[in-house]
Length: 408
Image 1 (cartoon, one colour):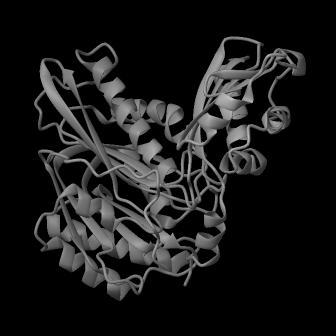
Image 2 (cartoon, rainbow, N blue to C red; image 1 turned 90 degrees about the vertical axis):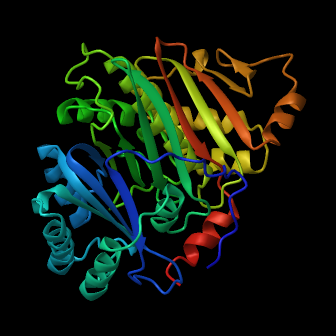
């Protein structure tokens, strides 16, 4: 099924090469489509790696192995297969992943555990080992490609390629971070549901990189939702080659550690927003700010209850400022809330304050705001200092159309 680009799409930026990182693409033919569907990224020796993974207990072999591999903290290669998630495929699926890891490790002369594999697509069909072998062989000898080609290759129902970059000054050296990501549906934050990869030339110890990525994930990928469904395959990996030759970051007190931490969170937030902007059938990008909660985590949970409500999402799709649906979503979140302290607004305009609709509330400017593509909602619980922002999209008939026809 050919999909029209999302109206919320952003153009793919001109991303620089990262020293020690070489992407290549090939066609394995996992689906009947006329495009490349296998991405291979070769990494310099000594590259540090960190990862966060889906919390879906029916996860793929790729996720199971990736979790264990990331603990060692080193990577030499990444393989991403699109069109087949290889999840719920048992022994046959595992053998296919191990075959890919061994094939790449033999080519690079590295330990098999330093080859990371991700797969995305239809669940329940074992990854064809013959196609995998031929696809990997083609990728190993392909010419290096640009980031846009790599991003396009990992997509499935994505309607636009997603990538971004940022920089930071670390110990007097400028380090660069580049990220690509795929994701459009089956998006809900039990980590987050997508395949995302960040590459940097910064010199960072694996343990500190893992700490930074986990913290960034909590404020970015774990604060987005499209449809409340958590995928079986999703992975975010960060790779640091050390080619910038900055003083290696080992702990928060190291020179430039704060700058690197902020840069990693920034690029994760940008990537997370791109996924929401490509939410299946999405017409509006929605930011929900929750304040006055008993804790930041409570605020996040309230925000996600609002963001996952089909009634709220369809009201936004219909450009209806129905704040009563927000009241409902807050109340069902299972978090501390007080009806008589609750305040709700759209586009910076309060519709209700401290449990009461405002007597002078004018819905006209709110209605105008809801006609736009970028929507903001404000919720204040009036209970404490906890705050969080979550991001989602509206729910339209397009979501049904895409998913009803997904396997064809």
